[in-house]
Length: 350
Ligand SMILES: Nc1nc2c(ncn2[C@@H]2O[C@H](COP(=O)(O)OP(=O)(O)O)[C@@H](O)[C@H]2O)c(=O)[nH]1
Ligand SMILES: [Mg+2]
Image (cartoon, rainbow, N blue to C red):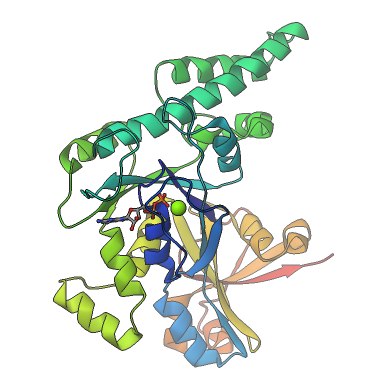
């Protein structure tokens, strides 16, 4: 899953990136101070992978990953996110909107004062505005082609109405078939969104932000970015001590990736064998054929069936052969809805 940290300049995107990846990308007190983009993969901690790896002793152990991009964001003349930057968001599967909630005299705020709720509204509005332009343009094109009666035109009209009302389109607004019709437009507000409040010593404007995120139906993750970045850059042994001192159980990295995983409705299925024990992520509700496609497109195309055992049964019975003789290894077809922790063996022909 490819996610991107977006938000206004100086909200702390790079700081949060460092906090959740342990990297040391340069932060800056000045907007647009550095060019380029940071990208990192975060492994999703998973005790089932650890335990299965102990059992199978494979050559490789691979955790599921969430990819995080820290984008360089350009501002338009109104202080909002510029269209060139929004165009880049269209490649992302989820948007993590970083909001400044820390007070600091040395770091300027682009709009003069710290107000994370106002910033969220501003960022969301710029996404809505950008999508509205795309939708309107496409509608104009369909009108010219005398396709006002098409299904595409109808759903675009619904989307336009929603956007005009100041609302994001959201993930569930279109049915699966309609999503396919519109996928070429790559609308920014059809992506899942998570708000990330970057707090400092104290937190400014959090109450208003909590209420806005509730209204918008957007999950909110609160993290003291600077502090967590400093912790992430300590030696492992010092990290633990420091976290305990701060009353934190886990570093931001683990909390963040688990939060994203849950809020984006991701689950993991696993594959096991002498070469590799590996976790793969899919959206909750995906079927076995779709899961097969995560591993390789050939497995999706030539899917025959899946052998499925839960990782708890497999760990308990201590082997695939043992699981089979205990009747815990099921044969499932392509429509089987994969559950979190399922161990899959895909049978296919090419
Ligand atoms: N005091 C304080 N400063 C922060 C915090 N988070 C970020 N900063 C500072 O704010 C400035 C902008 O941060 P940066 O991560 O580069 O923001 P970006 O432009 O959104 O990537 C830098 O000077 C950071 O050191 C924080 O929690 N507290
Ligand atoms: Mg930055």
